[in-house]
Image (tube, rainbow, N blue to C red; front, side, top):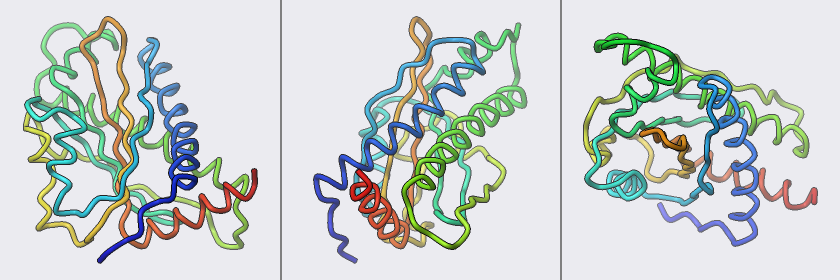
Length: 212
């Protein structure tokens, strides 16, 4: 399936919309950790699913070990939120949240899931809040979420997704990374939406452009 690339105007509008939503996620993380959180500029592209492993490796770092949690969303939009943590992010999180001593595997898992839930919920909530301001729709604009789950622990980023197990052919990829100054912590919030979601987003951002 060949999907048309986003136009420059569509890309810029989606980047602005994503930046607002990711900013809310960053603010929620800063509140949780009581630390200032830096955000990167959102990176946006349409990717063939078969190319996702090398693309994720490029975004996160080809030689870096990572852990990742996923949370699916459905409703007005559908897709997957994948939160990728650089190692040794668990220990940095534990220190920031006041844990002492070794967390153990269970404690680390709970910590990653809590942070993943905060980031994905705040980002998608922020995005929907902006969308409701300028779109004209008579249907529900609500989103439902699965429980977050751990995808992998301490693997290369290219190993996170097996394209053979994904039923999509293409995905819209939105990525922002969050870092904390003077701490060995980085998290990449990555959203993937399937083909039908790409066309829906295209329509949404066209309305966003028209509204301004």
